[in-house]
Length: 65
Image (cartoon, rainbow, N blue to C red):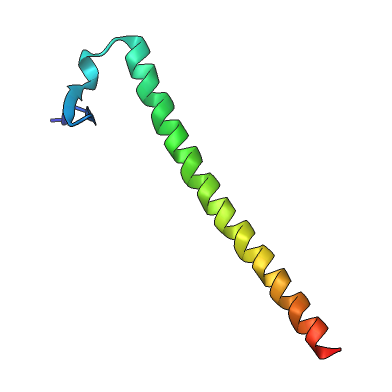
């Protein structure tokens, strides 16, 4: 038997099945945005790491002169 999907907002639980279509769409948007935020943070971490690698490489190159 499948478990009832619920969400918690402000310490109160709500059954998704009891929500109207617009409310359920909001939940889908929130989930999608959470995924995009996670991906953006991951990409930012990669970009910052890559930038620092180039800065470090430049410093090393200048120190060798």
